[in-house]
Length: 374
Ligand SMILES: Cc1ncc(COP(=O)(O)O)c(C=O)c1O
Image 1 (cartoon, rainbow, N blue to C red):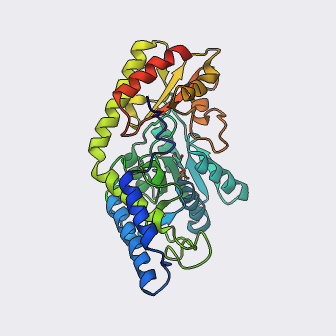
Image 2 (cartoon, rainbow, N blue to C red; image 1 turned 30 degrees about the horizontal axis):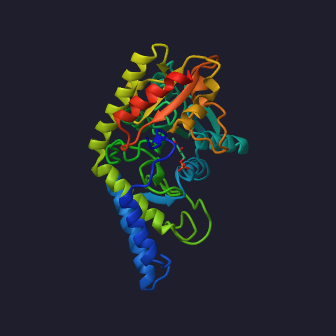
Image 3 (cartoon, rainbow, N blue to C red; image 1 turned 180 degrees about the vertical axis):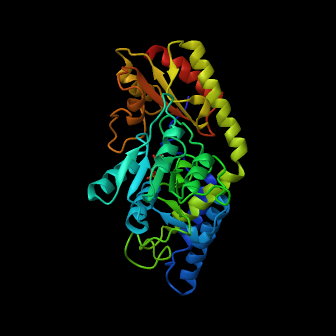
């Protein structure tokens, strides 16, 4: 059997149509988008068409989309610009955010420019909305709420509209890390009031190293990268044209095929839950698999001497999964998310995350092979 890739929350393979769109541009469009001659204008028009595609997908205006090098930069930009340019002195976030948010918050706290508060998390890993309400009600201090739409490790979903409405009610800024949900769940920014959102192409079958930040036009922020006038002065540097074209193509496809993909992935996830429960009754699931992203299943295996080798043994059997999130050092250091929810647990976590190429037969194979590894 070919390798089975069940790590689609870490990244997704490039869609062949996206690859074609990108290579066509690579072969034919070499102009610098800032040049005013024909080659430059051609490159510029591709970037602006891509921006329109992203804006249409989110129902916002093109002036609110800024291309970046990915989700990490988009989140850094939103958080740091909000503090530097919008007078934010208090950020309410959660301990379960992605490291690019948590470490940005550490960096902000270290400058003394804003203080950081963490909202309470319930036993299933959801944000405690009553605690959030208390925190946004409690002061008139300029506050930003930063909460992710779907947790990348356990998949839990934030009720985006409810949190956006709460923030709007108290005139609090809202940043939502939507890297895991972009293209997977509909987001209508005309209806849902958000200050900042982030997206990353490689999570929805686009290329790595390109993403975008949405900044609501009411939030007037200064350049994040100083340099030329690219991205309407917000981010200097010659644009990654191929990446941007690939991002737009991938997002367009994700939106067009969303319902079919969602129902396939939902089926695969349910099937794996059923098969695991039936075969290994001592297995359970981290977070709240009933209110979580249909692409993520975080499985908790009982403590066992072989447990530490589970990920490696899966890899040797041709199955790619993850111990938590994809870790930049390549070493699995355990998950801060699962660690927060179950601090004293000696159980072993494997995150399986699904893509549209996965099948029920692959799930059968994985469940069967797990037998010798537990
Ligand atoms: C929730 C979340 N935010 C941000 C990122 C960072 O995105 P990128 O890899 O494009 O920098 C990731 C990627 O793992 C993620 O899952």
